[in-house]
Image (cartoon, rainbow, N blue to C red; front, side, top):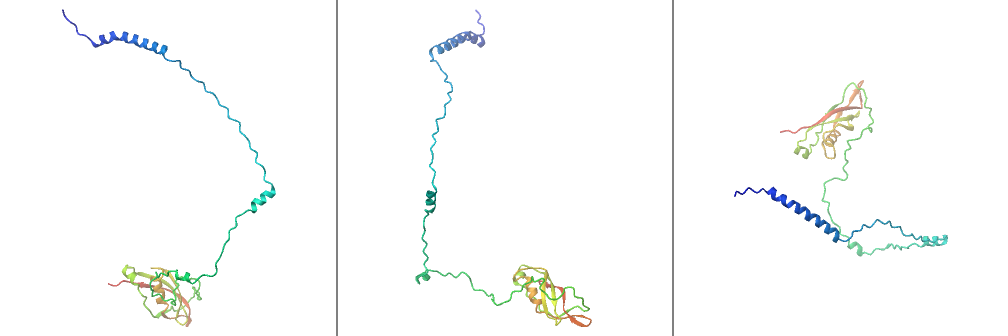
Length: 215
């Protein structure tokens, strides 16, 4: 007797009907045994009544009495201080000694509009410097390699002295800078004054003051 090959699909089909029948019986049994399920409908709750409390009004005399009731703070100022208070003050010296001269006049290099001589004076002969004081070259400027020229407008009087000095081309502004050094030097210069029709006159002249590092 020859045995044929058994396919798994044939085996599964034989159990399909049995499985369906058991599933239907299980569902029917569940509906019969399980308790009845009731869905509670939504009930709207009404808000409770709000109680209104009447606040009594404050009369005018009571209001004034409340306003007048303020805390009183007593402030006591003692004029007499004992000698012991001075002993508690500690003096700390934090400023080192300085070489600044309190009586030295600081040169103001921004004095435009305060000169007496007109800037449009016409002359036949220009002023010529006869005594030149070289400017002090600040050491910090040398160390930093700062060099160049400061352009000045100088007022020269009839006697050859210098009046007003304006810095029109700055090189290093500020106290102790090259601008200030140039102005201080030129204020000490002496000029042969300008002339018009053979007579000395006051006028303005422009020229640079050079600061050059030499090897």
